[in-house]
Image 1 (tube, rainbow, N blue to C red):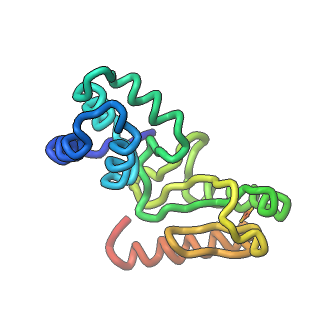
Image 2 (cartoon, rainbow, N blue to C red):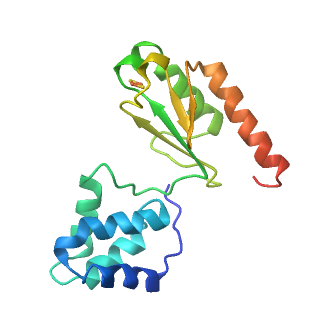
Length: 167
Ligand code: FES
């Protein structure tokens, strides 16, 4: 389901150079790449694996998939974080999550909409348990969500985007 992003290899070389092409700096290098693209494009990981001595693309993939901080899928313009921590779960986060999936037409295992507008992830706590169930869309917190409330919130975003001529 991953849509690939065109990778700027000169930019990658710049990052690699700043970290001395050192194997020991791999995590920092991947963090930088993720800062640029908001995820780790496959081409970038392959390039890094071939450029750093003692590494291979497979090793870089292995590291990237091991650490939860790295995303292998592109993020949407709107990054939705549905909390499924204990407090949110007991207060009904699953129906909210399902409503988001349904609204955006995300199939099982798909995290980003085909148009790149929305991406969805579940998180284990957003630090606002008193407002459970909580959803965050980019920097905005949506408290005490229900499936209806999140659908309305998403509709507002979609309408705004349509009005801007996107989508
Ligand atoms: S468990 Fe959801 S905000 Fe803490």
